[in-house]
Amino acid sequence: METLQAYFENKGALIQQALRSLMEEMSEVPDRLRESMSYSLLAGGKRLRPLLVLATSEALGGDEKQALPFACAVEMIHTYSLIHDDLPAMDNDDYRRGRLTNHKVFGDAMAILAGDALLTKAFGIMASAAKEAGMSADSALSLIEEASIRAGAEGMVGGQVKDILGENQQLTLEELQSIHRSKTGDLLTLSVRMGALVANAQPDQLSALTKYAERLGLAFQIQDDILDIVGDKDKLGKPVGSDEEKHKSTYPALLGLEESRRWVKRLAAEAKELVLHEGIWAERLIQIADFLVTREQ
Amino acid sequence: METLQAYFENKGALIQQALRSLMEEMSEVPDRLRESMSYSLLAGGKRLRPLLVLATSEALGGDEKQALPFACAVEMIHTYSLIHDDLPAMDNDDYRRGRLTNHKVFGDAMAILAGDALLTKAFGIMASAAKEAGMSADSALSLIEEASIRAGAEGMVGGQVKDILGENQQLTLEELQSIHRSKTGDLLTLSVRMGALVANAQPDQLSALTKYAERLGLAFQIQDDILDIVGDKDKLGKPVGSDEEKHKSTYPALLGLEESRRWVKRLAAEAKELVLHEGIWAERLIQIADFLVTREQ
Image 1 (cartoon, rainbow over the protein chains, first blue to last red):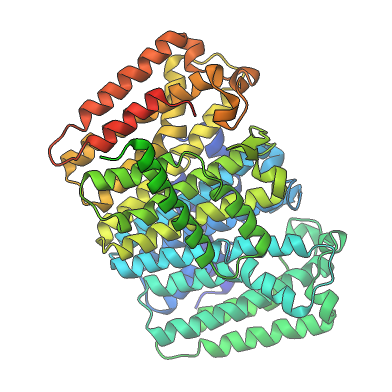
Image 2 (cartoon, chains in turn green, yellow):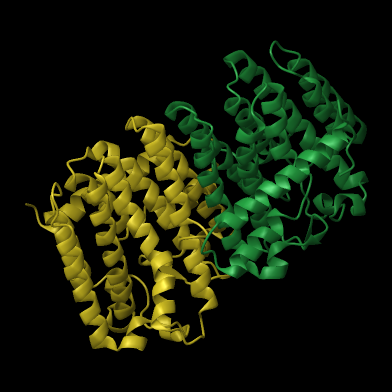
């Protein structure tokens, strides 16, 4: 099996090309809006969410071509959320993925609208992809419903609200987990479940993969908090120490750095156990869990 | 037949109740976010778009219960667009529907997120509604694709971008029409087409209704521009003269006030002609076209 790095590079290029095509296929988009959307969407990043869609589909023997547009849709949702989160009215960040944030280049109005447009497009892509994959009305519409819930007020957007309201407050571990379950966890879980659903996962497989995704999501967030303390600005493509600066509650602040590291390892181990399941080709999903423990960006 | 005013009141109450229920059914939404979403969503307004969904479905003998959630979805999309358009980074408006704008009450961050959440929810509602109505995968997914196109970069969001880029510029009539076709026209057309599609419109009926909606959309926008000059602040629930203040190109500025009024009348007459079509119960759609010519708000 190719290394995870090779996999990330190959599939990353595939995703990049698919995102580029999706942007090019949109007709009658004002140039400035297209530039603003593409600037953030095509800027790279880890592509963790779309890779999870592809890897999960692959783990069930699914068709990569059918999974790819779903991977793109979830990356669009992720990108829109970054653009909006970076706005001066929110986190007010100047850098993202090593480049100026969207609003620093295109202005706040265009950044808001580019985010809106990416979110809107994501649902259109899911609908087209479900049609293309020949999914039943029930499966396809349930998937879109779930995407709406996990990305919206009950999921990611709600998590961002809780995060903002929790700034400058001493949160409990439970409150912090609730924030992250929705803010980052829901979209990671959606990615895995999309990959599973488009590959016609059996209920027990779907359940195991969902739990895998939940462990992964939490581990990912804790590692993010750790990297904000001990990470390398150049590798991360953004400044470190910003959580402390913004008086955000973090796992290292609540648990200590070493205990946080132990949590990440434990969660990754649990995630790996979960995918040792009938009919799931687990190797790649295990590699991804391992990567999340050791990643530096 | 009941008067249009009675229809608007009855159906307006029905829509209000349905929107309220949809908000209440959402679980685990942070209170502040729910308040911000509800503040704008339940603030009233003309409810023109959801009424068009219901009236079009009714005109084809469709089931009101099946059309109602689509009506709510399109109103959520409309409301999110108003919340974002009112932001300081965009139009910077303090009043809307006679009340303070969302960001004036909840702050910019919450207003951005409430808009994001309403847009996201709208697609979930469409998916649930299509399932509930027993639509085929192909019809349901095509409808969601169309909603994504008309509400997104190729439609409403693109129109807002063109509108912003066109400020302080002398636009031609053609450019102005292109802006409004996407900025307001696409969502009005979507409303009519949703109502038609959920009521299983025949292709020729759908085509006639689409053209009806396009005439209506343009008439609506011209009347909006007229009211911004000659309207009554109290009836409109927002200040007049704001287009001129923002140096926006308008129909009255390009055509003159009287010629603009003639356009509205001509477009309404064309719209009314179009729905005199086999299998379409046209009375209500004609009333709505007449209303758009005489409305003062």
